[in-house]
Length: 478
Image 1 (cartoon, rainbow, N blue to C red):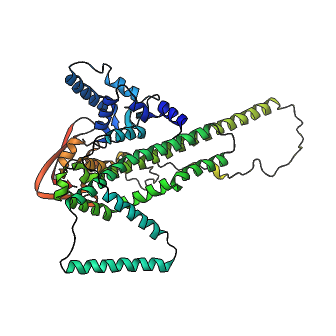
Image 2: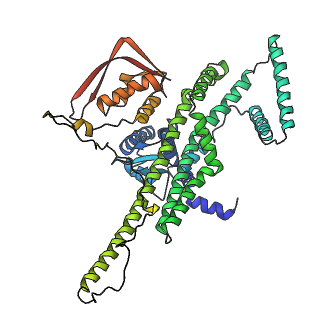
Image 3: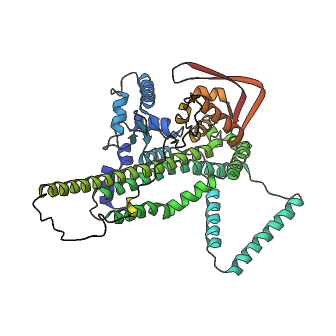
């Protein structure tokens, strides 16, 4: 580590500034309890300020004096400022309330502080076995000689045959409780580290997007070269080791069979006696749902940045078209001023009044409509008035958002009913949203429908009136 580099990092890196802050204990304890412990990706300003008020109240009660006199919102604004950079403050599309997300550097500082505590058990055997397994995978996966590969597979087959014979004879070795606990703790640490990796991936995407915008703002070449440079940088992160690894991880996690396998394995491990003695966090049983939710946030971030980049390029094209129109108007005005002053005799002949240009870059990017456009006309009219308003007032229900609601509710319990889910996450789009919940219960989620019992689900419509629906009891399960 270079001295000057460390001096610069101490002055500029958000993680180091957090550890050196006067109120580091208060800040770290609050951010860990609000974001890291429950795996919250984003929190609204009012909700986060309320949580900070409660946190400060308990600290003041315990100390018997006012330790932190500023308002909660003032602390949040200070932590999200460019000088601190511990929180990321932004406005989601279509929402006028600020939201906050934990910065990747802040999560690194919190993880470092958490690891300062004295660990009750430090395992070394499982990590040594992991090193051996990884080395075997590297050697086997990079071997080019077919005979060497076949020989290695035959050796494994012989070992498996010996193990099968020993088990058939009633001789098989079991892990002792220490080995079980050691491997479980290593698995839990790796699973939690995966969650923090998603924030780092989000940060990398935003950094790439900022670099692209700076490139656009300072570009003075042709648009074709600009687009080639931009999309080259966009593909760069997907072609890196990090991008390929994340894509492989996401494809593996999205496999339904892998999700079921993870669920069954976690259930089996958490039922073991040595593991129960450790009193593990109950959220570990649903850690793969946390991975899915964090991955969905990352995917939405990429889609949102791509949409913003497209609008940015459209604005640039609009400015160029405006300049062209201004030049054309100047030519027309000069032509009108010279009318009657130019010899009327023909001095040049052209085939057409204007050239036919078909430039591929003039084609705008496709933007799907928010509402369908009805172009079919009525062929016959029998004098009957037809209400067509419903055709133009289509409602789109975000099924991904409803699935996230179900997964979030199942993080703290084994099952949840549709009525309880509607109370925690109020229905906003009426029967359309309720019907989507029913679709998820019958197709996409693990759920049970009890026709012998009923449940009342209520919501507020657009006019503020309370609506109720009586449905069979629907229970979503983890």
